[in-house]
Amino acid sequence: MSLSPQWLDELRSRTLLSALIGKSVKLERAGREFRACCPFHNEKSPSFYVNDDKAFYHCFGCGAHGDAIRFLTDNKGLPFMDAVKELAAAAGMDVPAADPRAAEKAERASGLHEAMAEAATWFTEQLHGIAGAEARAYLQKRGLSAATINAFDFGFSPDSRGKLKAALARFGDDKLVEAGLLISVEEKEPYDRFRGRLMIPIRDPRGRVIAFGGRIIGAGEPKYLNSPESPLFDKGRTLFNLDKAAAATRKSGRVIVVEGYMDVIALAQAGIGDAVAPLGTALTEGQLERLWRLAETPILCFDGDSAGQKAAIRAALRALPMIEPGRTLRFATLPAGQDPDDLVRSGGASAMEEVLEAAEPLVERLWKHELAVAPLDTPEARAGLRKRLADHAATIRHGDVRGQYLADFRRRFDALYERAAPAQRFQPRSGGGGRGFFQRGKPPEPPPSTAAHSIRTGGLDPMIGRAVLAGLYRHPQLIADLAEAISALRFSESELARLRDAMLDAAFGGDMLDSDALGTILAQVGLAGATEALRAPNRLAFSFLRGNADSGRARRDLAAVIEALAARPELDSALAAVTARLMASPDEAGFAEQRRLRAARDEADQALAMLAAGEDGAL
Image (cartoon, rainbow, N blue to C red; front, side, top):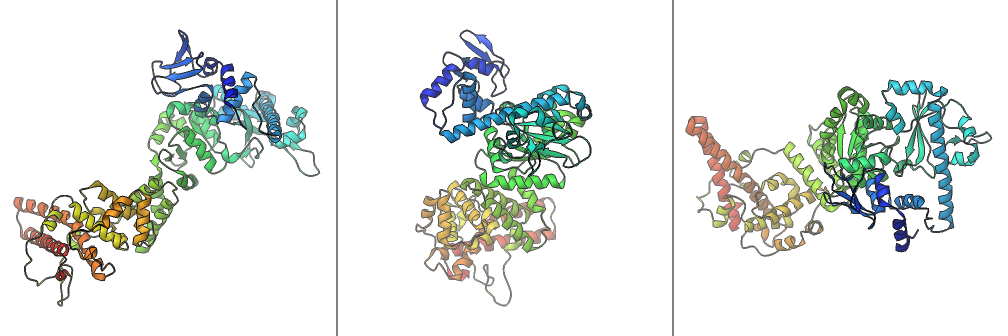
């Protein structure tokens, strides 16, 4: 369908903007314009103006601006074409059809809409008639007010196979079957689908009835019965109450997803009007897209039981590939054994608001779920946790968000499973004349070089930091093994810190890395220039910067340098603490600990100095 600018201009000119907006916003005359409190943000004094002559509205508070079509898309949440069709119908204009088949489809849908609207009216009449006494008693028992019953157009379908069919006979059986109101079985007359049920209309974003949900009044199965899919009703793209919630969402800035339509209705009666629900299925990609049109971070609120939490994690995993900056989810969990109706009855709307305020980010929900999957008391189980987290992050299509999730999972994992303390990790190796990173029995070393001195004073000197990252670029297989020590390095330049984090994220992805693959990954996150700098000559004589890139010595030296650099600040901190304690209360154990820490610090300095100078005796 192609709408020309001329046709759209004619549509706008035939629409009195103040009359359109005045249906949902209380306007007051202000000279040649109208003003009101803005429907797009909460305010106490009016700053929203409507100008009929120029056919636009503008809010001086939040900057909302647009015409009649924009108002319907932004305020009511309608898709563009639905907004155009609604305005065209009010203005008496025909929307151009793309081809005869599209026109035929539109005409058929129009007839189905009419049948559904008439069915909804008939169901409402039955509820308030003699046959609806039991249904009215049920609604009263549920605590639903007359205002709520009217707002959601509750109805009742008598326990009969043909009363609705007779009432809507003018539409013909074929159309009623197509609309899902009748059931057609071979060699039998079509009969009413809904019998002996409380009826709840399901509407599209324009407020038109497209399906029904029927709840059994007494005993029987299924408890809830929804209309089948039809030309009007796509279950996977429809959310119950979307037509009403859209306006409430514009004011609150949020949208809440609960499990069923009775939950939505209970919240609406309590004054929480920005809730919607799927229709008996798990959330789909199409429903998530609709939610993100309303709010950046929809809140999914499920029961605290096992079924509710499984539904939450299914929704989380389905949403994960689609998240990006400005598109994510939060998860709120109801108290065990309570649904929204129970909660607002016992504690009012404030109790529900407390649950919503405590909603967790998507990353937190995934982390907690994976921690609880199985015991984590073996290295294999912990490796499994790490792989599952990496697999989840890998499904995110947006590169930067994927990298942030990898980094967040890595930080959480490292915090949970820390290695041994650095003071112990840097004990001298001894025994049998063997050679270690910090060898005993050697002549005293010369004073540390300038490079080694800069290592132990504050953040890493950029030249040393760049040398270490260059070594990791040449030997990326070491990154995962040394992840905690690498994370602890203090870089004085933010670009180097970012490069370090990107390397860790790449290693955490689970793939075997070589330099080429690592370079590709770093380029994908915008670090191609920084990677080139790693290849530039460095005046430090570390063995891992030389041409023998495949030697075992280069890898051992690189590991030793990183471990020592990571431990050095902690050794200083531990030494300062024990010294302060000794000044207050001297004892032999304290003096022994002080000597041990000093020896470890001196050995680290000597090893760093030798490694920085490239001396063979360091091995």
